[in-house]
Image (cartoon, rainbow, N blue to C red; front, side, top):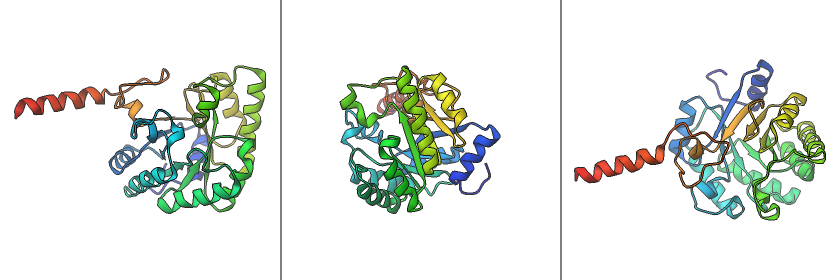
Length: 253
């Protein structure tokens, strides 16, 4: 990486060099600025904002207006990192809505958009990329489908799932996606998908052999102690440090 603005082609170059790509989420100005100062090349304003900031039970409640609000806040940090944003639930059901809502996120400050699915949304993906908007794919466990699937389940255990995910990944690459998030995919399949593509994969709960890793920042720093995914090892206990700082301040009054 150089000191210049990160572009999608830079992430692909990282894969070609065998350089792991770290990616994290941010939903506001200070977090985006801190992650950028720490050298994170890809920052995602994720719809995980619904759970770790807005208090929703899952991501299906997040609206376009809420995503725009948080994208604007993050974009004010003017990061060197590539700033991507999630298209929320039902915002890309058709080509027309995918285009309209991608434009809205870009107008708010996003430099790329992400949506969940492979061949099922491939016309939307092609249309978004056709507008000149970089597209980040998302395969495996799809959080926006939690209600219909009845929870968060690891993907790729059956031969049928394996074949589907490999085909979906190849379809996203051929459509022009610059990278693909692989969430809760069995590590052997995540490795095989990563090796089969020229674009980078970003794993989350999918083992160490993806081209990079992406995490929800509050999970990484222990800022959301009421729930931590099994695959996350927090590197800080921010919640306890906050409680401790508040307690010391109260005692000082």
